[in-house]
Image (cartoon, rainbow, N blue to C red; front, side, top):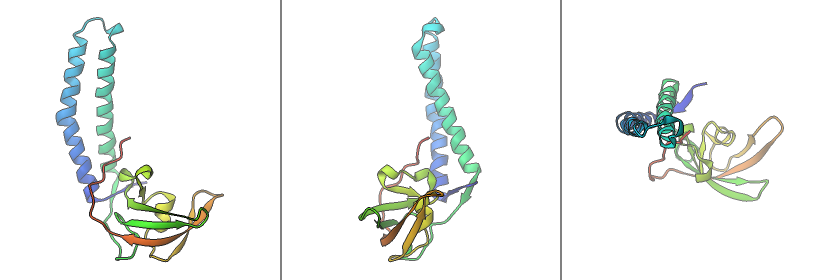
Amino acid sequence: MNNQLTQDDIKKMEEEIEYRKLVVRKQAIEEVKETRAHGDLSENFEYYAAKKEKNKNESRIRYLEKMIRSAEIIEEDGEVNEVSLNRYVKVYFEEDDETEEYKLVTTVRGNSLEGRISIESPLGKAIRGRKVGDRVYVQVNETYGYYIKIVAVEKREDEEDKLRSF
């Protein structure tokens, strides 16, 4: 399955890759060289920590490059009162008698603890394209689901969303 990403997601990923290749990689290589010079590698914790950080950086670069290669580019779309990418949506959970607000985002920007839900999550899939006043069934798995009602949809200009780390 392809990752659904916006052109802005791709741009941010490319910027992070460039930074990691030009800045972080150089720092990591220097740190490995420096700690290797401390002598006996069998008891050199700093050397192993530096190698681990270098490998972590390289792994992140490969991950981002793979995400870009497999991406399906999508556009921010939707009418004014329609739930769509990068819109804030207030949702009433019937079962809990609670209202929550979320921002609908691509997978690489998703972070439920910060109120950003992915368009590929069960809730994101269920509400995308729906309008204010719609009652929607969210299918979580084969045996569980719940009803919500879309209370409000709003497009706001706000701080840039960070890419999710891995």
